[in-house]
Length: 452
Image 1 (cartoon, rainbow, N blue to C red):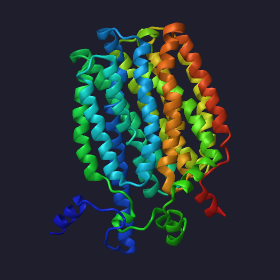
Image 2: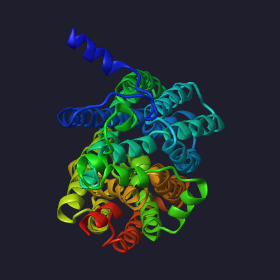
Image 3: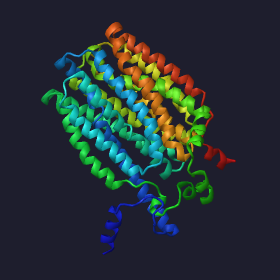
Image 4: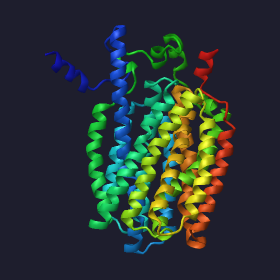
């Protein structure tokens, strides 16, 4: 009977924090927190990985679409650019909405929309059709990470946030690696349309699992706030600091935050590299390095898998070695990135092993700062504004960096070859180094206050 009761409690739809919830003693609180932290962590990771299945599939299909329908890299790059602009704007607006919504519902709805737009995409042929449908995909995709950042800051202490953020960020590489291999196989054997249909069906199954597993905040389950639970502040202080902000207070918090703007600019230059490789690797590996579609799929998968280690390592280093400072780790990663890009550029065609090593190095190095940008934004913003702060970094990353890496890199490749593209990547990496260096000593206010 106890087991049945526990199961019913587990699957019950838990309302928001205003609802009546049971009270637990201290031992129950520890057990409940451990259980729910683990459940929230793996649910976010696998759930956000599913977003990538109906996102990176377009990039993998670009060479086949171009060969089948005759579109140029500039035209297909334009689809990427429109997607990036909509996604970047959506991250800011949906960041604001997610701060005021139940993360469980918000994230599930985003994945549902992404899966449905991928299904529709598989039926298209016109460039205008691709652009419009993929723009809708971008909006739904932008509903994915803001609720993740909200969940992370509500369920995990700032003293472990870098590590947990890095673990959750494995979803980027997990989803990217799976779709790189899966789409490569599907396109080669069943045509490029299958790369939109099959991932969409998988993601629809994940929508159900995601909705079942997630819960919004500890308070919605009758648990204390994470600050109170971890002993950083009292329950009363946590309640005050986590109160609602009106629109004016919210924008003032973000507008006058110098560290946040530096992180945003750094993220813009970082995303030129990250999304440039992310979107164009199957194409330049084929044209510049002489790799087959299957081989390039595995090399992109190596890029994503290495990023798993790079992201977790960066989060752990910033928590343990640099005591919550994210700037030094991001700076060092991007300095190494400049070297890795130069190496990648000069590896001759036909050396698949050396090119795989280059892709692995770039993947490890690009995802470290990508993880820490979100952590730093959460550090510098109030918990009630974390979704919007992280969304703002995403706006800079996608409207600025990723949009540039779409049509701009496509145009450079069409007119100056991939040598011009790599020079552009290297300059962007150097500019990111400067921005991250200027946040060298910055850390979360709650850590500074607790140390004082």
